[in-house]
Amino acid sequence: MKFNTKQFISVAILLLFISLNSYSQNSRALPPDKPKLIVQIVVSQMRYDFIHRYWSNFSEDGFRVLVNEGTFCKNARYNYLLTQSAPGIATFETGAQPATHGIVSDKWYSRSANEMVEATVDKRYRGVGGDDQYGSLSPRNMMASTLGDAIKLWDPKSRVISISLNPQSATLGAGHSGDAAYWLNPYSGVWMTSSYYLANLPDWVKDFNKKKFADTYVEQSWETLLPLGSYQGQQLSAIDTTKQNEVNDKRKSPMVIIQSLFKDKQKNHDYNILTTTPYGITYTNDFATTAIVNENLGKDSSTDLLTIVFSSTGEICQKYGTNSVELEDAYYRLDRELAHLMSFLNENIGKENVLIVLTSDHGTPDTPGNLSTVRIPNGFFEPKASMALLRSYLSVTYGKGDWVKAYDQKQIYLNRTLIEDSNIKLSEFQEKVRDFMVQFTGVAGAATATTMVNAAFSQGNFYKMQNSFNDKRSGDIIFFLEPGWVERTEKPTAESSPYSYDAHVPLIFYGWKIKRKSILTPVDIADVAPTTATLIDISWPNAATGKPLEELFQ
Image (cartoon, rainbow, N blue to C red):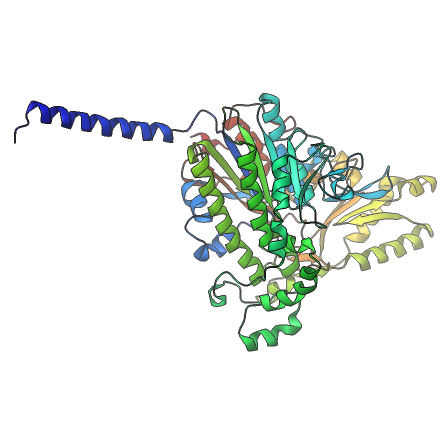
């Protein structure tokens, strides 16, 4: 077949157009030297195996996309003893261990103030856009800088914002230099912040609050997203097992129980409901996408950082239990919200311009009741009873006195003033308490503050204990329980152990220049901030001891 000149030119132009169009599309898909936006997603109390446990019911566009198209670190762990939310987020953000960044626990006993203090409470500041008392927070107890701080130090034009229903999580996520941290006011359902960050709420936040989405969510009933028969766990929540027969007879979801418990709170618009239902996940995601638009995140050459902490998963786990249908349902709904978030980012900023890092603040144990069904050793440690016995023992040994000042999550704080006034050597007194505590059934090991200061452990649980220990904030005696043992609390699950169920969490990098791969190399969550800083070629957070993950650079 022969072409005349006119036909030849037409075909040539058409081919050139197709070539240029293809080149243009490929050019737009090429990632820039640095991502325009980093989105850090922290799913509270998400154990590593939850991804595999719930995989069959995940959608195609949420967790499956992250795992299948990103770099999935299968052996990421926290490398310290007291695995809790505040230390977890601080470690993730700073690249340092609690011993260095100072957030050793969600709360600790302050010897100077003679009281228990929460990690981010700071009465020098007031609430902005909500209750003053509920907004008296700052990140100043965190003694190291964060990834967000490093980004702001490198480029002051970068925007650093953190969002969570939980004020402590939002505050630690924003770091010292963050432009804003936003959290839920449980009394009014609005998003608020602290005067540490802002003197007034931005107009876009005020407009969002005026829409009263929280009212809509607290009025919703909570039923399973999928047919109950498709759920991996079929047990009722631990909140009211007396209604088990009623629910079984009706062949309905255990959410029948939840709905009955929510009626009074819904009537009074108690917005704390949001923290223990999947609607809190949706509300957080709604606010996060609104923040991206109104703060123009990812729209210029400066790298912005948005940290989103989905705290509802942790609250639901604590309230209903690790194997509850409620928790499973929350993860299926979170999966859909992640799909929505990624679709939003792809459409508005572009996958090639966004780096997503997803992890958790800590894991969670199975309840002893669940372990008993498969004959795995387990038990409950009784903190109130053990402290009562300890006080009695010390009174018999040293005379009546207030020898123990405070106890919280396996840390015992002694009355050092009384010990000194009694001419007793502190280290000997600590050893006496340590020897007493290790006699309790379920206690695996204990160490004194003196030992933590003077010894150097290189491996094992005492090494993890040392990573949790800060001389100014940690207890005089710290102990840990046997595997499968938890403290007896009002909640079905507890935390603060060095074992895999509390320490092993998911870690996924996705988007921007990230390749598809799975990594089995051990990763300390303290490695994440140095890795991200190295990816974008900026200085590390100032106290970071983690190391960049080499596989991401290969």
